[in-house]
Amino acid sequence: MEKILVLDFGGQYNQLIARRVRDQHIYAEIRPYSKITIEEMKEIGYKGIIFTGGPNSVYDEASPHYDPAILDAGIPILGICYGDQLMAYMAGGEVSGAADTSEYGRATLFTTESVLFQDVPAESICWMSHTDYVSKVPAGFQNIAHTDQCPCAAMSDESRNLYGVQFHPEVTHTAYGAQILKNFLYGVCGCTGDWTMEDFAEKAIALYREKLAGKKVLLALSGGVDSSVAAVLLGKAIGPALTCVFVDHGLLRKDEGDIVEQTFRHQFGMNLIRVNAKERFLAKLAGVTEPEQKRKIIGEEFIRVFEEEGKKIGHVDVLAQGTIYPDVIESGKGDSAVIKSHHNVGGLPDVISFDEIVEPLRDLFKDEVRHVGEVLGIPHELVWRQPFPGPGLAVRIIGDITEEKLETLREADAIFREEVAKDGLENAPDQYFAVLTDTRSVGVMGDARTYGYVVALRAVTTDDFMTAEWTRLPYEVLERAGRRITNEVSGVSRIVYDISSKPPATVEWE
Ligand code: XMP
Image (tube, rainbow, N blue to C red):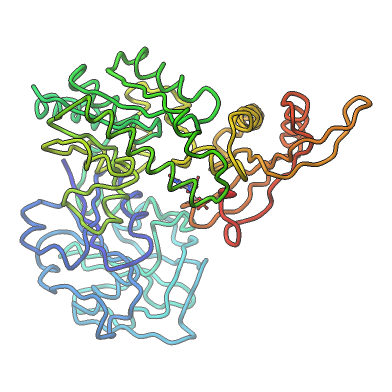
């Protein structure tokens, strides 16, 4: 398989760079600059290297540097932003910076003839974010682009296949960014593009069929995208040797537990244990109103349920987990095995004895996981499922949780989701749901006074869920959802739409 190394110097777009390379059907992996040697790079056989941006100036003592021998290692390199400056610095050029040369945002890029700029017009929009710039290209390099502010926006040493760009080709604001990356990957590195999800799925199934032959494998299925895709993939590889445990805590959305059961047990014929634990969760949660306490109770109860299941299952050979690439990178551990608490559902490995962990999705980004899910034939609504918090509806009911409130919220939430989907906006907000508040308000129905709950509708648009904008849903969608909820769900008399962004609010109400 062709591989590109994204050599991480601490920039904020490192994952995006790897994503963009993979969009071109070439596998890319991110490694911190301090964790890989030139010998290792050669051994792995990277087709090319991308130096990422970084927060520093190359002249800062603390700024990340790399062995200049890499420039003569015979592997093509593309330096981006700090990576471009670092390449210039390592090759004997000069880097300068002053307030009046800094550029943030849109700039017009003027390019000259280069393999890097094939099919890129001489004048196009690029996206800049820098103060320092290459003020003198190193010997052997040519200046191949500029902007009004930046005299050297790109440079190259074609004899050594070294390229540097001051702008960010990985962001969509750079009009020809994808073309420029493609030129580097195909034109300079000579890649052919052998990374596809169809291929990945086929190879992974064959690999695990061989690797797990004769072993008993256990997977904790949450119904979320990652564990679902991991389950189906391994199910196709080893069939009944895989057991999936699905704990239904009774805090799921309308019909969700049944959909999970239907999909995995009936559609895919998998070995699924559904633990219906609603009563015990509700008993533990009775009268509890404090959000963190709710979370803690649910987390602990989950472990108890698994402990009991674990005793029944006994020893397993392999524990399978739905860990994905961002989890691996964020753990900072690179290649070593990582156990993410949110994937093993809060401590599962401690209570079930096993010899080995497998993580079939650990090289994939989220949208690649979804794509594999589609290739495997998992239903669309499961593959494109919006995120759902582990504690479920418990953090969307303000105040204490009762069976009746859960039922009310499930109905209201289902109507809202239906109306959003009807509008063809199914994938527009990144997350959308209803919240049952603990406020009651006066209403009128027929000639009678009512005193029902206030339901809040929430829809957010976000890239990473760290910050979020409230989504401007069309009034008609809100109107339909609101009218249907008050008409069809008893005990609800008023609907409000949440127009808070994060920060200062959070996505969930609790
Ligand atoms: P907040 O409310 O923190 O939510 O802005 C950000 C994202 O995280 C999800 N979320 C959770 N997920 N356990 C989870 O597994 C939790 O306790 C939890 N709380 C929030 C939330 O749905 C949103 O996608």
